[in-house]
Length: 589
Image 1: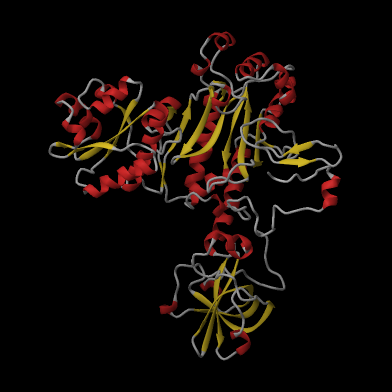
Image 2 (image 1 turned 90 degrees about the vertical axis):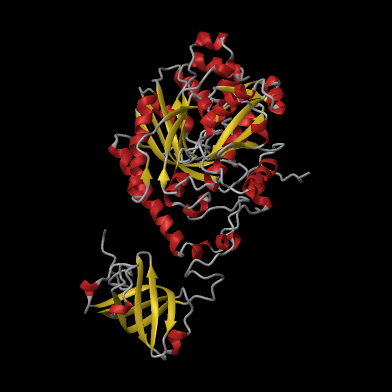
């Protein structure tokens, strides 16, 4: 790192140690905290690199009046701290600066909230004064770690032989599943650009152009309803490769991601195995296509066990097409009745179920369900539950039963303390359905995910098979129950592309209009290619352990209403600005 010495400082606030004792140094930074001990005044001086304790003679009224977060310059001598005053929690904790002179560079007004400490401050206030929020230790650390992780990813991709590209941010609208942000064109009356949801078509065009291995730290934009795990503007590690099949693409992800986690979370336990789970198995065993493999609970289909049984509610439901999913709760047989009652309330209020049936396998099977089942059926259910455990049941049509069972599995895993937050369990989920029913079109097929994916089917099979039986050469990487990556092989064959879009209700004219560049390029020789996009914000958030809120790893995020309270956007513009881009605001109604 180049020298940071200047007229304002000889050292940073994070580098002085006992080796510097006796030196006269100059530091500049923010007044992090003041402590008045009468004859002595202690100031913790903070900059980007750390904190150094500075000692002043007491009674200096000018210094005592300085508000926290004022920026000051201090010159003094490095001295060793008394043994009882050593602070091993910071690198500079063995020394302090005995001040000889000081100067105020800028004064701070009274703060709207404290920067020192971890006092809880409302989100709206934090975002309005984000520049202050970013000075707080934890958030400042997160942003610096984000910087280091992105540099690490970039270096790693270069090391693996990928070339870095930048693709346009002003492009054309395309139907990719989410709403685009539209940008009016001043020079092209009545026409609009769109901000990219992802560089999908550009990175595929680069493969057609012969560049072979592409990557980009890509900004992406989606005008979606916001949640804590979604941002209007986000970044992804975007990758595309030519002349590859799925194993070669997976190999890149398996090379980059575990090493990234181990580098920046050295205390983490990264599971060595990265299994492949089909979409159908994921929905059956985990009740989600984003399974958290840290949770050892597995869901089972027990429909046949209840078929023809004396437990009439379930037996009749199975005959009418419903399924029964069983979710074990390990070592829960000794839980009080109130615990089971609370889970029943969760099932009705949060999952929309009519109730929650269960069996407790203690010395003897207990519960209303057990009384209606013969010994053979009980034995099969106990084998699923295990000793000293409970077994909960969800009865519904297949899709809602899977989702409800998955949510209950997650809750049981959390309530029973089965999940270690510093474990990292990675898996690939693949073999997604290529098409799903579109309720708005009477159940006709529509693309399940990415329309650019390659179908695992020949052209003849596309013409003759049930569309809903066709799988896509598509995958997600899931880490701890969070979708971190989507990718797959791309549909590079014009005839197969036409057929897939035709099945999804797009006539060839729509394909040529909406995807003209890609469709035309494929006519002139396209290599087999594929790739993925990793959500950088989600990945960094999980590694740093910030919980669901991605905004804790982003310097200047919008709030959950899509507002930037610091800059005041979105904001109104003048009539002349609207005229320049040929727009008239219509009254909402």
